[in-house]
Image (cartoon, rainbow, N blue to C red; front, side):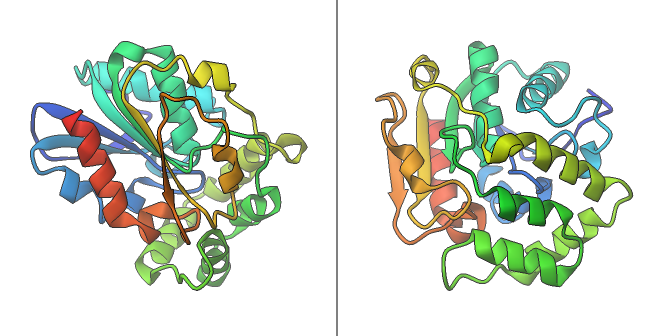
Amino acid sequence: MSGDIHARVQGKGPETVVLLHGFGGHHDVWYDIQPALAVGARVLAYDLPGHGRSLGYPGAGPAHVAAKAILADLAARGIARAHFSGHSMGGAIAVLAALRSPDMVASLTLLAPGGFGAEINFELLRRYAAATNADDLRTCMDEMSAPGFTMPTKYVAGLVATRGVAGQRDKLIEIAALITKGDKQGEIPRDTLASLAMPARVIWGTEDTVLPYSQTEGLPANLPLETLPGKGHMLLEEARETVIRSIRKALRS
């Protein structure tokens, strides 16, 4: 197994699930989701390159580097095929992994994925990258959520602990500048998305303040959309049961 990328592993079973967090997160954002999926399946919640315990991964930043890193780590573990679920930047990385090695990706569950349109809330993401104390992080996380949703303290505390690691803040600022270059994000063309052959599903909240719901327009037929009215960008916390149900459905596919 790679010594440069970290994954928390739970459960055993014939199927494997890969969980990829969004920008600025870490594997523990799946804390209330991973155990539910680990009943009858092996579930790996990764720290993406440049994040958490994968902070020192060489060349961390670009999504394609992360996709290659995840695929290489799975191969090193002897895992030939897995169901991928990714939130935000993690969704873009899951798509790139599927495009790179389609035989290794059994299904895709994409939660407000990055790369589906150029628009991105660059100002909020850059503030989020630079935040280190609980008040600033909570403010950013609440702004990413739907109006009226307050981020649970345990998730804020988890980020505070991760941001306290030497070099983490600087790395996130660097990655934020990369993914919001020109105040836009990179796009995965619709015809490229249409080439994905594995079962896939896109889930998006109508009140997303980071990646607008309008980016669901014109999705190819192979990417059916589940709309979550009144939900924001932080779907792991705002719509936990929906996320669990959708990934379980992918496992059955």
